[in-house]
Image (cartoon, rainbow, N blue to C red; front, side, top):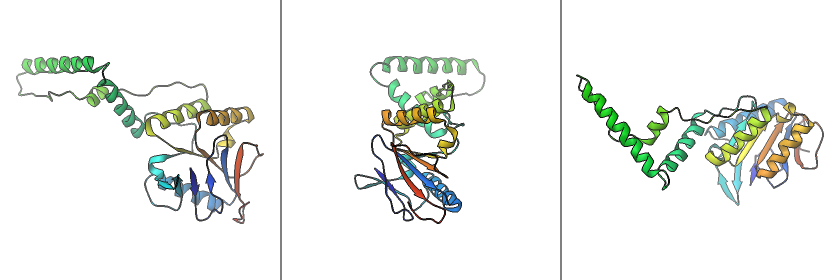
Length: 222
């Protein structure tokens, strides 16, 4: 898989055991690149092109940008929607099908008795949908974390499994991590085989497992 842009001579190629780092020292180009990527992930047009095996991939469906790693949103709509689909699928599979139908029938019978007790012409949907059952129970993802890095890692795993995210883009992530945390972060990326791009304003050291593309203050690519 690779990410290309007309302003970048070098293609950003994602390979196992390599961490891609795009360093943009020029402030305007840095801001423009972040804004353009964010808009494309939100579904707008732009000049970044993500592809795999020669086939174009829409950034909206395949990429996630993390600007503030301290506020990972595990209750966002797209994540919950994907969770509900997985839960509905599980509720109707062979192991839970009978139990699901029993619960739906029990609720329907209760609602009918409730209607019978009222003097008003009340009614209800006889087919109690599984998504509605999940909403009634406030079905959600609930996790506790000891650190920012732990929450980021768990979010990435959920995004891959539920949203089928292929690329994670982090903005200035290295500024938040010490050497040990950075090592742990990189090791997790390698173990899980995640495709990750770090976009940084400056370069602070160089690691053997990093593939760095540097755009300097004069917009020269090094």
